[in-house]
Length: 119
Image 1 (cartoon, one colour):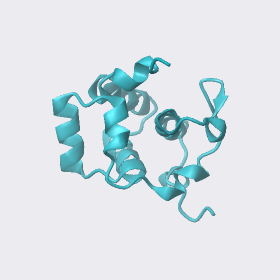
Image 2 (image 1 turned 180 degrees about the vertical axis):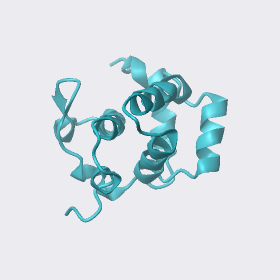
Image 3 (image 1 turned 180 degrees about the horizontal axis):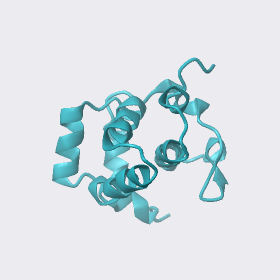
Image 4 (image 1 turned 135 degrees about the horizontal axis):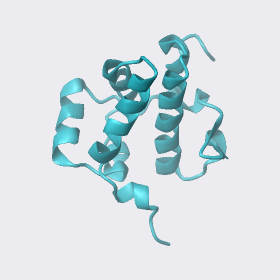
């Protein structure tokens, strides 16, 4: 079975699109970075290194220091598919991030995006 094309794409090729989507709706790069840190456990320094070295999506999630266990609280549809129904873990993590950036762009409060107080 061949890997999905997004797995081999560099994270730094998609990251500017996340930021642009957020900024078009009055949100900030810092908020996008906060979502990424929450989801993956990367520090600002580690994220900067990843953006410089061209790490691909598969490695980005495989090497994540601490995937947030609360990411499973992320529900909804992204790209026509329910994120909670995606069986392949890497693809599900990618779609979790997509969903959170969408929520940011739609004006949700950060505490809701980061599933604070939701269980």
